[in-house]
Image (cartoon, rainbow, N blue to C red; front, side):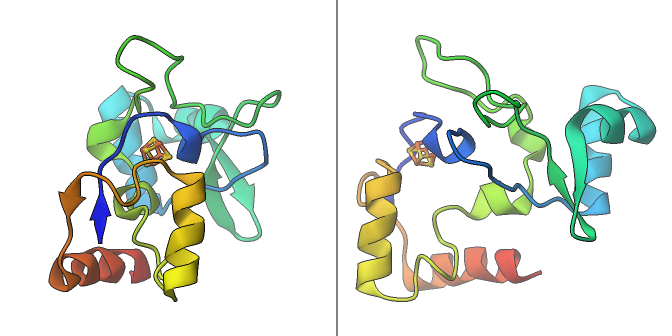
Length: 133
Ligand code: SF4
């Protein structure tokens, strides 16, 4: 399979409610990157959902709070070096790899799918393992 992000930002944007699940370790890594206390990080950027934690999104358009506005280079992730596993492993999520049809459907949501770098089965499995943690 191939994939190359075009930086359109669609995967991190609304218009629908979304969830970017984060572990306590990932929250701490983001807080460290932003030089924030953990409490401040929770108050501003994290919400509790069903016993887990998700990054907050803008109330009006449901874009991730860490997605920069559109610019000449596309939309950037403001915490890219410490982005959560869920973001690192897109689009190679188990659901997207379930069948050729599922992968085709993923390509309708993400213009980077079927473009760019070739990913071998081994490389994809490494990413899948990271998602399953
Ligand atoms: S939707 Fe796909 S191409 Fe667009 S930013 Fe997300 S990963 Fe990149």
